[in-house]
Image (cartoon, rainbow, N blue to C red; front, top):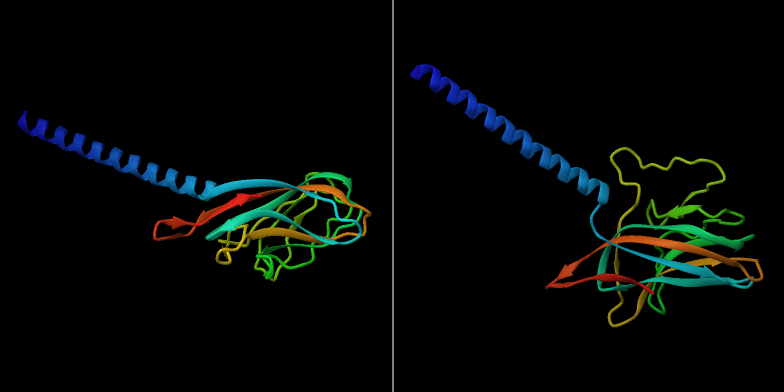
Length: 199
């Protein structure tokens, strides 16, 4: 009888250990899935109105304070009252004097529809990736890569510094809107973390 009880106890202990391991494995997998799906970071949005009159113009979208790691940035066309001609569109960082590229000059949005999406999926030497909803589109990253390309943006000391969208149009005037979405992480230095705000 003692032998049977001892073996039943061992079986019970093994079962409890197995269930505990499975539970912890599930928690780990859930945590990884959550991190992959949500990507972490803080989100912000800003809708800008394009109104240049047969000219090149820039619209500030977000202000950078300190340094941030840009995890993702994309825009959605939300109004096309007049969007016959828009060329040479791109994102840049601007401190009032300097304006390094975030993406390369070159995206064309002429005649595109509400719902068209554009995003930073490459280096600053690449134009914004366009998903033109004139047809159905599949957008994906290379194997083992993220679809959005990350970068670090740093404010010029004691100077207002912005992410802005610059474009050229021959419309007189253009009248359209783009809703920009960003996800970022502030880089911490001695307890002072960078941040990003819509303007």
